[in-house]
Image (cartoon, rainbow, N blue to C red; front, side):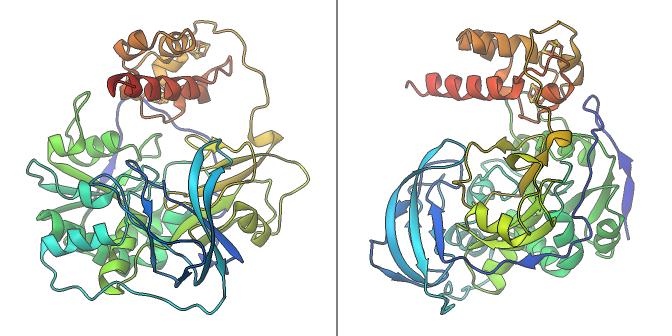
Length: 432
Ligand code: SF4
Ligand code: SF4
């Protein structure tokens, strides 16, 4: 048993928040009558549909193929018939192509071919084939992350789950410990690394205990500090290595993987199952029953809400993700994606309805920023369209943790502005 002392990183802060669904075991929600599966559930190029309207599919049939190294396959999450393929503007105001499948409730399933062997290259190929992406929210294709150009020596498993409300990773860590452990070992084998660290927040003692049983894993108990789950901060706390500005984890010999991702790796390798479902916490005081769900990809958010007993009368805001990094929905036209971890129904008391006021130059956002940025200036440059200056002030280093906005007494929408600036800067760099 090896549990390392609780550690912390400079800056960041403790945030208030509760984990209402911590004691709710994971439940598998019945598949809905129709699933709406986006072909853009990952970072990179959208997948290209390989089915046509009227085609019959099974659960696990490939319906859209990766269109490059940074892209990911997409599989049907139900058996049935493709009834439409069209653009849908989702609840996050994003226009994306969706493949719509009418469920025939036969539950027929198609599997990936058996593994030829368990060599590193075969493991990476299986992960690519199964359409696995970073399920912590980033959505970066996992196979690409496991083939770095530099030598790595450490695999870090992110068990922080530091956002308030979210508990699906925690439940998996205590309910499916062995499968997660095996998934971790496959990823370590693919990377050819022996040094494996799992970081788990100190407020999850059952999970810490469960993983401390494995002598070949180092368990690092993480202080309750936000944003502990950010890759760069987790690497620093687990290894003492600092990822320089503009560099990536592999530049310091590390690869970070999420709990749900390694579980999906296990399922793809041992059960020959592609990625067709994800785990999501439905929580907030605006929902009648807070739960941790395993849901088919493409399930309407409205079905999740209905399964949890519906919204309360005082529910005011629906958020996809956690309260810090999640995004408020403009409509309920939203469908479960691979990367979803949370669906929150928040009441007045859980969300601010104050209108933003002028910046009072208090400097609190800069003092709290874990990336040592000056969010008030970046926001101001973003709002005036001066994206060059926003870049000079480090906009691209923002990890969108939301701490600046959380602490701002003027309720400025800092993260939205910085996020918009990042998108514009990237467009400029790509010559658009
Ligand atoms: S500027 Fe970015 S990294 Fe800094 S606190 Fe705000 S959201 Fe987090
Ligand atoms: S915390 Fe808000 S009010 Fe204070 S400097 Fe930052 S943006 Fe301005």
